Image (cartoon, rainbow, N blue to C red):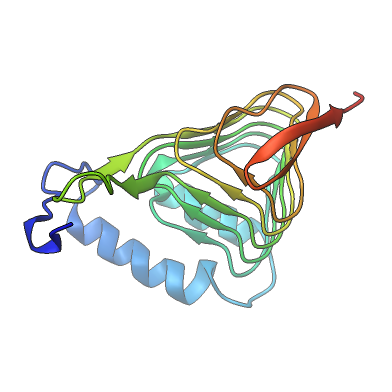
Amino acid sequence: MRLDKFDNSDFKRGRSGLVEACWRVFEGLLLNSWLPGSAWRVALLRAYGASIGAGVTIKPHVRVKFPWKLTIGDHSWVGESVWIDNLEQVSIGAHCCISQGAYLCTGSHRWDRQTFDLETRPIMIADQCWVGAMAKIAPGVVMAEGAVLTMNSVAVNELTAWHIHSGQPAIPIKPRTH
């Protein structure tokens, strides 16, 4: 690859450079801090364009690339040290748990091209899903309703509804009762 040929000038960030710079300051000082409390974190994300439902809990040390590309449904939890690296839309349904240290990644690069082109795809997590601690979700993944991704697993393909998925890459290992 030739990184001197990389060009992402066509990437749509979604807000002006000034808004993004202000967000970086507030994210670094507040959202990603040790300070206790969830309600003010939710309010901060909403102020920067996130769509967040009722009863959502956001724990300390959470990172969100672009809050204006984030939707979280009612009564969902985002655990400590979760990183939502959302160059594209990330949608988290209602009654979901995103456990400590999980990484949701919507962007990658075309390793097969010398220009190392940026490639982005959204992530969709349906209602009643659980992303285990330290799990990773790749660009374009859909977690169907009730799916579980176990601790330290890596989702690279769609996760089946009401099934538990485990491994690297994650595969369905057994049904989940609901």
